[in-house]
Image (cartoon, rainbow, N blue to C red; front, side):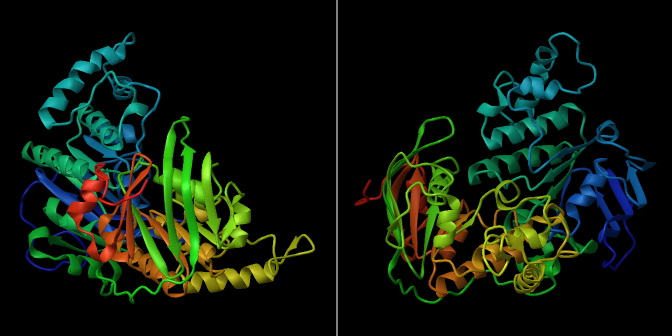
Length: 519
């Protein structure tokens, strides 16, 4: 059995494709991997679970040659090896599909696959690999046109390109880091079919995910890590969602949140006949209208790319509205600046945490006061007040359970869950009137997800109006008091959460307007 916590009979003689033994990796102030053992066998999906910062991605980056271990051994097909770079890993038959794809957007699919591929001719290399792409596409059920440019592809299609890149390079072990985080439910199901075909051909698949339901449905074995160590390895058929969550976070996790009955107060946010364009100059919002009261959560559901991003940016001052009005606490704030909206009581939890939510090179304490640095007690006579900043940051770190080596640690070194806690601590600390939360639990583990959902419910109970944008229908239905569905820039309908069904929401997400809906 794999994992230091496992006891029982000696391992069988079944062969392994890859075996990581006693892997240790340190970073300044952090022991990321502590004597970790992990293996993957031919024809299996071995899932790797753990909270953000548990050491999963570090371990896989070691296997793929992006990091060198401080101690431990790597064995591939029974031979001890040294992996000094991704090129070494690829040569040994290890491929990796990162959570954020490594593709050159202006290039075609074939050009991306040909980049760095051995044996391709100097002239017209893309043409030489196009046929191999078509063959593998057919073999594994990965339909993609070699001639299309990557920027034209959906997230699911881009992921197929990454998998094809690995297969064409001879990958026998494929590492998938959060593979469904950018996929629709339909695309995720197609991915699982591909994994089944790969298993049948003897490939070993390492599947990193936070989604316990899909891990239980696709994996053969599951290894759980916590704070750099392996807690244990279990058979997917012999465990449960609750047991895996307990192993991950070291305590019971509440999957069904309880919330008090909605008692809406005065209208805090009113959107009237809103029109706005996207980055390509096309209309992304077409007459959007709704209102949110204090003490209420309005969920915005819909497949990505139907105007949700543009709506959030207009409401937070990051994008200009072409027509229509936005009223905050009865005041017309259409096309006002982000600082003006923030000062008036609008909090923003952005979709892109690192690009929009923090300044990566600044410290934790500096990021915590970004929106308040110009006001007392953090600033007096144009000078920052270090003591006030430190005291506030220390309280925020404790209250929001932000795991950081110190207040002066650069924010970019924190895990995804801790970056999100930092953003929430900054945005919610001033008791905002309106909270605009875009995909607040995207890519987070069960422990962080539970905490962030409870924080949003607490804002509702304290009288804030919350706009929750999410592609997770379970999250939308669990947290929201009312649910609006967007399709191609329009509201298809708004339904009380207690009356909503997956079938009705799915029809609206596909473009069927609810009977009686306006707009």
